Amino acid sequence: MTVLKVGLAGLGTVGGGTWKVCEKNSDEIIRKAGRKVKIVAVAEPARNKFLSLGENGISYFSDAMELIEVPEIDVIVELIGGDTFAKMLVLKALKNGKHVVTANKALLAKHGNEIFEVAEKNRVTVGFEAAVAGGIPILKVLREGLTANSIDWVAGIINGTSNYVLSEMEDRGISFDQALKEAQDLGFAESDPTLDIEGNDSAHKLSLLASMAFGIKINLDKILVSGIKDLDLKEVIYAKKLGYKIKSLGIARRTDSCLELRVHSTLIPENCLMANVNGAMNAVMVKGNSVGNTLYYGQGAGAEPTASAVVADLVDIARNSIGNVSARVPALSYQSNHIRDLNILEDGLIKSGFYIRLRVLDRAGVLADVTRCLSNEDISIESFFQKKPREDENSTDVVLLTHECLGKNILDSIKAIKLVKNVIDDPIILRVESLK
Image (cartoon, rainbow, N blue to C red; front, side):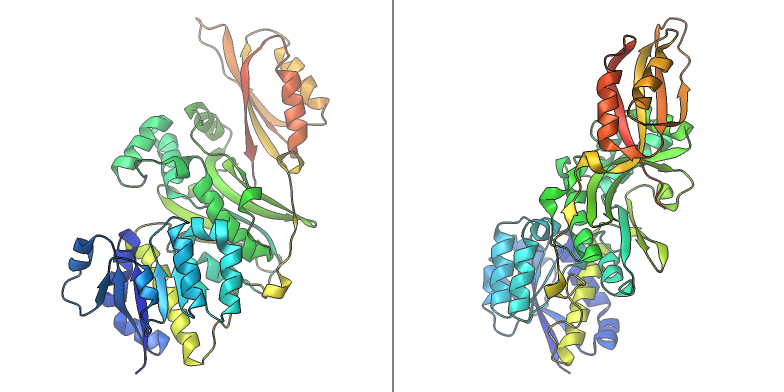
């Protein structure tokens, strides 16, 4: 039996998980791949991590670049992270005729266009299922399962840290800071959670989802990004009162010949399946023009869930190599000569409903003045409520939900609302999505 020989770069959480999955599921992998998938060399600066694997007869290197010089290695699995050294490693491996599997979403979001071009030129494969939504095989769904469809939109909860924080704020009524601290204590959030709570991690993943869904180049720099770090508990409470939940979503939607690409906190109806994805779990919804709405749910991080996606890519490479085929299915779903550019909409040209919270003095006529500002921009109100102030208060919150309108109209109306005499503090604005 021939063996697909793998060089594993990085023995962190996912690297260790990849080793375990390959070992414990080796028999199943052989049955599915038609050949053995074996890690024959490991590169890891911390030698103690390698020694913890036990006596295994595999080669050890402290420098991942040395893996590329091992002629019998067929595939480099890059689990180092970052986008500087990892880029050099991946490009050199591809140019040396080695396949690459990676979980590095930042690397692909920033340099994927170049990496995929080099891979095609050298007739080798880049597998990256683990780069988006961990153990959920969403890229395979877009690449293969829904290939007969023209995709209308993709929307996902694709950052477990943000989803855990928002879930705890809603379920227990705790503040953002308290929920984040608990997420860190439980290992759901990094000691520096900036990448997660500012939305950039989700943007990296969305850039890959959008490329595969719509056959476009990776457009990280054109994604509209805002995080959850400034979200007040009031918004979570008021959204629930209106029949909604707040989730941090990555959204890619086709509109005529344009695309929306955005990551932000969003109100979604509480009876929507996506609204009930809680804790550190991930979920992605895809709407195809033939299949309609579909939902994919599971663990978006963790050692073995993510490793299962890494190993699945290795199995695909093993299967293809039996027939001496570099890649039966294009890495980005579309044939490379059919990848195209589409216009990415600016924030002001994107339509949705909106949630607006105003702090106002408890005076007669203030709501009429506010609704006039909205009406002047052709914005209609779907629902609203006014919180009854306590006896010792002279101000209160007014919350409105609008019907669908352009973002620029909302911004223009907010400029006028700020000038209303009895409105105090800056309005809070969030988008509302129906996910239909």
